[in-house]
Each structure stands twice: as structure tokens, then as C-alpha cells.
Image (cartoon, rainbow, N blue to C red; front, side, top):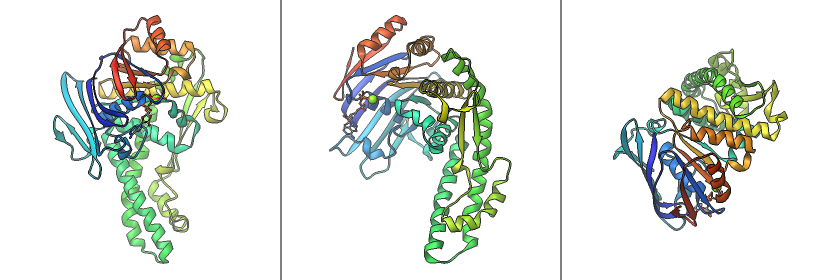
Length: 367
Ligand SMILES: Nc1ncnc2c1ncn2[C@@H]1O[C@H](COP(=O)(O)OP(=O)(O)OP(=O)(O)O)[C@@H](O)[C@H]1O
Ligand SMILES: [Mg+2]
């Protein structure tokens, strides 16, 4: 699967740009603030129908403009697909493939998968459980549409249940029957998500270990421990037990929205005790494993978006990564780098023939 071309209208700092890509390696260079990451985000929009960096779609509209749109032609399973994603201020986001829209946007997820590695993603290792849940939700959603559907249902009922608990508290009344109508679907969706997270990890861990071994020369044993209040106890039972706590706290105190995943290296917690290099390598391995598992499960290689990753890696790891790019392991790859000469040199040394784009204030020239 690869993206043949893209047209941007009023997308962040791009006014109008049309680009044709290489099915293999594309290098996007330019100074800080030129628009390199924005270009990757436009590709992310085509694949996932949203930004990788902001949860507010209107931020994507170029300042002073009323709409943005991204058009792309994707080649997948010997067919071409014309994807359009756009938003007019005040309207609903538009997403079509070959001029057809979806009943539910979640149906788009997984059709044209992509994996992005960006400097900010180190938060998956360093920050709280929310970042790790987001990572795994993103990976599992791309390979399992029912997972995303159930997660959306869960979050909808969680929000509604929490606001009901707040209302009970503020207005000093209780309607336990009404609360139950929110709890039942929450529990049902929660059990599904919990089960799928468990099953997914069993598949993911061996892939991750293999990739970690490959990119680092160190012989370290890595592991992921799934931490959930639901492990070994029924959600329904927990939910019943926690009702008094929920009423007091004015929110749902039990559930998969509080799950976490501990990353371990040689039995030690990576977040607390891992070196920076170990943390970076782990993150890289997580993302490459994500790419591998999507390839295995969907039978198509996700587009690989590598945003500014050379800065974060030592020479050995860069060489290893470029070797994987060259071998075709990732399929189509987009690499951004502010230091064009360094990257050109790295690619030359690795004997990689890349298509080069130079970005300057939202204007792109083919190098
Ligand atoms: N909605 C918007 N309208 C206009 N410009 C925007 C909008 N959103 C972001 N920008 C501009 O886009 C530029 C940042 O682009 P981007 O993040 O792609 O840069 P970059 O080339 O990746 O830089 P770096 O090398 O620093 O990572 C900034 O100048 C920012 O002001
Ligand atoms: Mg950038």
C-alpha cells in the first residue's frame, strides 16, 4: 500500500500544494517551522481521518481561512482509492473514499493504516497511563474495528455516567435505576475492551522482543505487564461493589479507562529506571512492532511516517533503521529532517535512493 500523491488546500501553513510521492522512500527536508511535520499530519488525516498532534480539527485550517481539505490517491491491493478529508468552519468534517462517505468514520480506520514516530511520543514511556492506553488503543483499533466501536461506546457511557453521578451529588438526589441504564452498557463494552487488550498483548509481546533485539545490540529481556482493576475479577461485580465510592467521588472509579501498561527491561520498570537510550529504543521497538503486527493482521504494510527521529538515535540504531527502510520492510516511508545534508549523507551511505522534497514556508520543491 502506498500514497501516490496528495493535494493540500489551506492545510496549516500550506495554501495549495500538489505532490507526487515515491512508493518507497521520501525525504522531506526544510528549516524548523517550514511545514515538514504538517505534511506528515496531512498524510495522517488521509489514513486516520484526524490529526496526529491536535484533537481540535479547526486548528488545522490555515489561519484566516474558512476550510481545509486534503486529497490523496492511495494504491492498495491493486486498486486506487481517492480519499478526501476536509472541514469547513462550523460544518461537520467530511471524509470520502472514491466519493463515498461512511456511516461511521470508524469504518475508515484500518483501511489505509499508518504508523507515525514523532519526538513527542516519548511520553508513551515517560508519562502516565493515559498515554499508554492511547498508544494501545490506536494500535488495536487499526487491526480490530469492533474494538474501536466498543471503545467509543464505553467512552460515551462513561461520560454520561460521570455527569449523572455529578448531578446526583449537586442536586442531592439518586436514581439508581437510571444509573443502572448507564452502567450496564458500560460494563458490557468494558469487558470486551479488557479481553481484547489482553489478547492483543499476548500477540504483541513476542513481536516486540524480536524487534527490540534486532535494533539494539544489547541482550535485554523486555516485558509489558497489563495492569487492570478487571484482571481476575468480573467488571459487573466490581461495578456493583464500587457504587458507593462512585457516588462519593462523583465519577466512575472502576473500569478500563484506568488501565495501565508497565514496560519492563530485565524486570525493572523502564519509566523509573531505564536510561534515555533504553527508553528511546523501547519506543522505536514499540512503533516498529506496531507496524509489523498491522502488516501481519491486515496483510498490508502501513505507511511509515518518521518525524525527526535521527536526532534521537545513535549511529548504530540509525544504520539499523535505514537498513530496514532499504530492505522494503516498512513499505512506503516518509522521513523528515531539518538537516538535509546529514540525511542525504546517511541515505547515500546506506545506498538508499530517496525522493527528496524541500519545504520552505509551506511551499514544496522537489529536490
Ligand atoms: N492552522 C495554521 N495556520 C497557519 N500556520 C500554521 C497552522 N498551524 C501550524 N502552522 C504553522 O506551521 C509551522 C510549523 O510547521 P511544522 O510543525 O510542520 O514545522 P517543521 O518543518 O516540522 O519544523 P521543525 O523542524 O521545527 O519540526 C509553524 O510555523 C506554525 O505556525
Ligand atoms: Mg517538525
